[in-house]
Structures are given as structure tokens and as C-alpha cells.
Length: 196
Ligand code: GDP
Image (cartoon, rainbow, N blue to C red; front, side):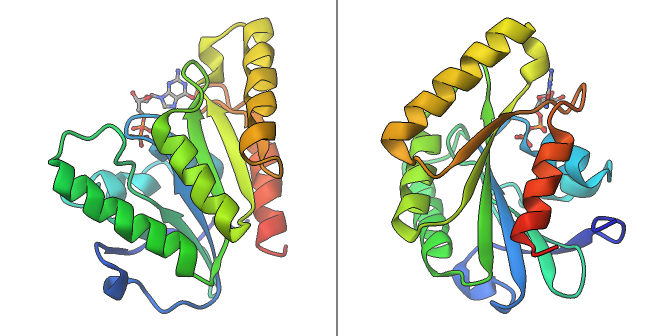
């Protein structure tokens, strides 16, 4: 599979530390603790892959995982929740927005959102950046296992309706790292973005 040889490649704290802007990359974004690492691990089938990004000091970096010679997954920092000084947050925001605006290898964004909270300010900011560059976005409503089926579908409808006002081209789906709901759907999306 595409993920068989996935491995941590490196981290960037500033734009100048990014690896060369070539090949294709799909970036994962989400607020701290939303379940982004679990999503990356579940989608790739590699248990410890995103643990690298949780290494102290790397949580606020842009972490790169190489899939094959031309394809990468990128784990973006989720600054929305972290207890850090405002000035540091602003610095991350600048780096993140510049990455999203400039990076040519970037071919899609996976935004991981807690199904019980839906869009928070961080998520809306991400969607606004993606809209300005017309980046394809897939939203994972994660921790879907926490809701009964009816409530999960209601949340999906609400999340979809809200997007009509924010970024109508984005797609939303249910996801769970616990019961693997939606794994095939997001894998198919990644395959599409990667031209497979
Ligand atoms: P990150 O900070 O966004 O990378 O979040 P993690 O992947 O470390 O997950 C944060 C917490 O949420 C952990 O306790 C996970 O076990 C839990 N979690 C992550 N995904 C799911 C899920 O799909 N369902 C449930 N019930 N818990 C989850």
C-alpha cells in the first residue's frame, strides 16, 4: 500500500526549514487533542507514526512523513488550544498561513474536527486560508464513536450545512480512530489527491 514505507522525515519550525517544495503533500490540521495523531496513525495503519509529532519540542513544528519518492503527509501544529504566550501563537499563525499560501506541493488539506464541538475559531481560520488559495479540503468529524448513529448523522448534516456559508467546495465525513468508521473514504480521497 501507499503507507507501507511511511516514515518520519523531519520537522520545520520556520518556512526556511521546510524541505524542498517538490512532489505532492497532503497536510493534516486540527486543534491540539482533537485526535489528529490518532487519525494519521489509523489512516496509514502505522501505530507510532504521528507519535514523532508529539515529541516535546515538535508539537509546534510542521512535521513531514514520507510515503514514497514523491508523496508526503504533513502534520501541522494545532495551536488553537496550547497554553503558550500570545506572541508565540501569532508566530505560528504566520508560519502556518504562509505555508498554506505558498506551498506548491500542497495538494489537499485534511481538517480534523471533534464531532461534538464542530467548527472552532482555529478551524474557521484554516478554512478561510484554504478558501483564499482554493485548496481542496476534506473535513473529518472524528470521535464519531462517541455519538449514537442518529446524532452523528445530525452533526454531519449540520457540519455540511455550515460549510455552505464558509467553503462550499469542502467535503465532510464521519471518522473514528476507535471503530475505524470512514477510514476507507479518507484513504480514497488521499489516493485521489495523490493521483493514484
Ligand atoms: P492530537 O493531539 O490531535 O494528535 O490528539 P490524539 O490523537 O493524541 O488524541 C487525543 C485523545 O483523543 C486521546 O486520548 C485519544 O485516545 C482520543 N481519541 C482520538 N481519536 C479518537 C476517536 O476517534 N474516538 C475516541 N473515542 N477517542 C479518540
